[in-house]
Length: 203
Image (cartoon, rainbow, N blue to C red; front, top):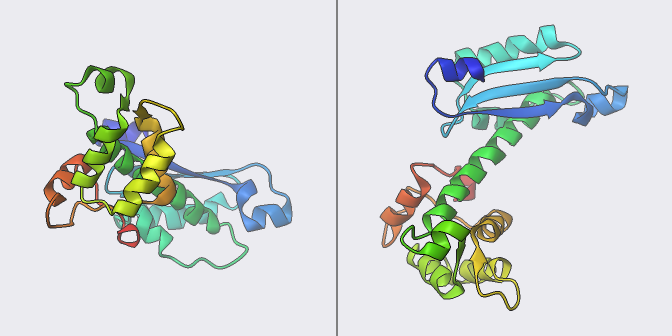
């Protein structure tokens, strides 16, 4: 990761998988070992691989091929790996990476709901319920999705909805939103995502 940052990548993440969580690891009782995919954000391109554990000298060849060919973490998720092999670790690490990218995208959306000119929103990370509902509807979200978010984000009797609670709600229900959507509100929604493209299966 440090090398990638030195090479000029502005935002870098790490998808991690532990040997102990794989099928083979559980069958053989392997408790030590880790595989890490270093990837750029937000495009998910694999920049490097770290492997510490059994069969690392064999697994690293596949990892090297991923980095050299410009594959993304989504490409790895679309690959079928044979059962009971440590290659499963690549998929687990890729899923961890994708989860991070999705959360980054939702966080950009939720933070974009805040009005920096409103003191309570800028300083306390919270928003009055009526303003939250209005802004969610302005994004073009389905009314049922808006209701789900409101129910999660506003505890009973609370006068404010925290942005942390809103983020938790949209990720829990996987509320669809895409920068590529057209129509009314599409441009605003794209701006809130900061250029983050949601995976097709979430749209």
